[in-house]
Image (cartoon, rainbow, N blue to C red):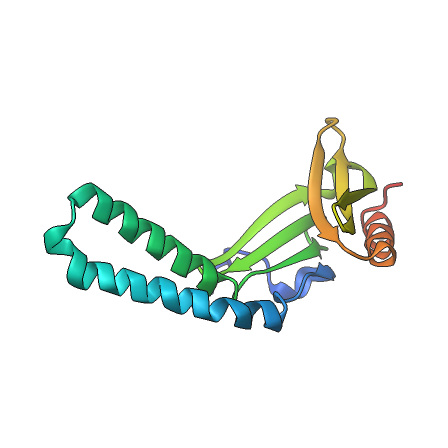
Length: 164
């Protein structure tokens, strides 16, 4: 009996380079009351508002409440990581969320340079790690709030991919 070919390469071919980790627990816990309020508002609109409200206003309210509740629940599942597929020699940006996993691949041969750019937004500083592709386009990878961690990731990327 023939075994079917795997659709995706096995997880063992991936070498982890960076993982954002889950959103901090304090932030996730702080959003729980807002998620509960959104769900309660959604329930209240469905229970009481349907016969009396205009159809358009009810629909907008239902969609807004559902999206807010979904956003607050999604915070418990968001996680991003940067992996290197050793089998296919490609950089993989993996995003895990409430609705599953999505991968964005960039072949190592398309990467010309790894760049770390400093930025500042009001009271905090951050460092964006980007790829400069051979076509000249820039591809944003991640934002890190610690300069040493950003430089460490850039070094790991350049060593793994083999670019400057």
